[in-house]
Amino acid sequence: MKLAKTFAILLILTAVPALAEAQQRTPPWMQPDVVKAAVDIGMTEEQLAQFRSHVAEFMDGRMKAFNNLMRRNNVTNMDRKMKSRTKRLKRRMDEQMGELLTEEQYPKYEVYRDLLMSKFRI
Image (cartoon, rainbow, N blue to C red; front, side):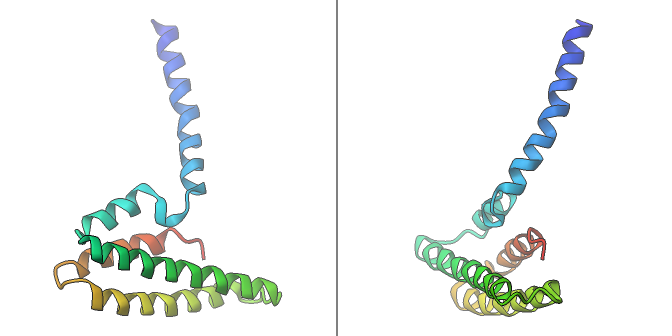
């Protein structure tokens, strides 16, 4: 019995880092807590299609900004530049969502957005 408990504890201790690593490899918009926050907004099918489009536009813009900085070998103040570009893209997404979502849905979107932003390193 003691051996079984020890084995179970060792199994759990080795599984936790593997789960954390797998979650880090998952793109920010696909992490379970972010997906749940998106579902919690309670959008219609029409809203959901536009929501996906706006989030994809944000993510594409962010990736393009990063690639442009790297291509130009513009790594001086990279964090500051990426934060600035991300902020601009976030404001645009907020405007789009403001037109798309109802007054009741928008605060839930803000929770989603803040959670999504917390997943980025830069």
